[in-house]
Length: 190
Image (tube, rainbow, N blue to C red; front, side, top):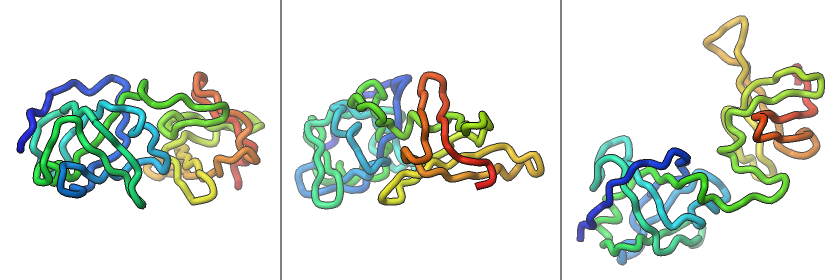
């Protein structure tokens, strides 16, 4: 059973939130590998935009819209089922597809809660107003999240200076998404 994939334009605020791992069960469900330990964005959006995996083996070309009937946690993974019925073979053919959802469909955050995607690219300054670098990624170490910063290296432009700062209130004074800055209690020589 081959569905008629609906070609779509990727929304301007689209964020890649996961990948399809493999088929799950016999009724067209599939496993999803979320890019976040808290996959609320996958649960909150019923419209997923898919792009083929890098290997190009895909039942569709370009970007397609997949309407989701249900997405849920199951054991230690996430599983989903499209609104349009597909069979196991079609679900298997989706393996590796990249999943995007519009940032505007993410659930609202509480005070002092941030989506990782909103922190990437922010400048990090310490209490002495010294720029420590730009957030390039975040790492989940279990009990806490760590900001990974890169700063240009004046001695070797090909190797940026890398810093890691725990993203906890003991070190993070303030996050200002609008100003694209994070203020921390951290020294350059730590």
